Image (cartoon, rainbow, N blue to C red; front, side, top):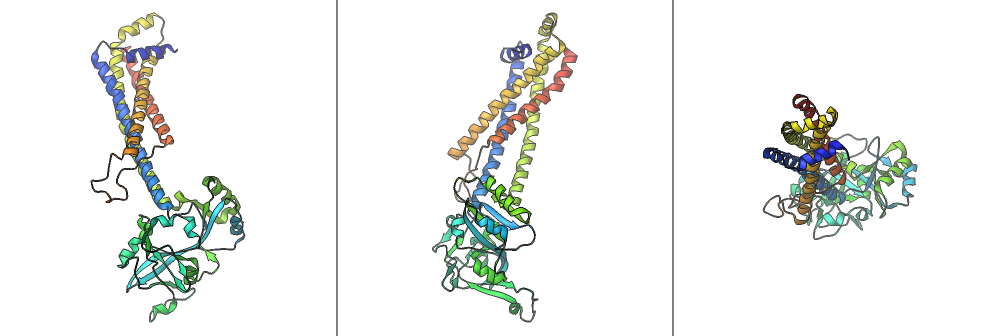
Length: 408
């Protein structure tokens, strides 16, 4: 065993001649442990919110989405897309047209995003899980077209999911300007009805502006027969999405983008990542301040052990070995604090995850969820451990070097 490490361990665990040194050493360990536990808990809470948002979008967003690199529309029968349809890993492939239109009902109007989808859209996503109302998912029936609106959109229009009045969608005709004397003359118009249901993703982006209808209606409305804005994909059980994404990108080439669920909501998740990073940086500064306690503990220990140092020098110990003793002492405080803090932080997260101790408020149902979500990721644990050890090691190196020159 390394002599410096052995002596440092003895100094750390043994009773000091001045009781205050034991107290300060204990405070140092506690300070590092608390800061470490805070890091683990905060990062896990951000992970929980990120997972929660991802779950909400799962009911609406596909596992992978193929869009053109340039422009909004692409021909549905292009050679690369035909090759995509032959992929045996794909369980559901849906053609989609998504564009903006004017929606009117009962003399009220709003600009909306029309999402025209194929007949198998119900199998592509978990749309049934987010439907509210007395009806069922239905987009076409004989000569009638249906449109499923976001619940917030219906509220803004002043109607409910069981509204009997027809909805009208308007979009400019291709290549024509607007006649100000009769604006409707230059617009395509489609009539549709509510199937007595609405959807609620619990995300304002969708709930307040989207209406889902059939792709055939969307193609008539936007005059885009044979075109799509996206191809949405769902894969068979057991297929790795990341691997499938890489394979499809090779097949499609540079004309298309392949987006996973996180890339489809890039802005939302990018903001969450920035918030998580900022929290990590601030807590790291708090951890750095906690490490100053270690410096105080080592300073008193160096003064207390001056006679021991003289004895070690008489036995042939070098200056580097003596400095190593106190460096090991500071590093052990950091490591012990890190281990205790990570254990405490993971324990608190598990308690919150299974027992829902910390709530948003006293009234259930006020928020999307009633308790703070947590999700402990192994990568975060490794990051916290490395951060604590690196900061602890750096925090003691220079002070020990200077104090050993002064007092030893």
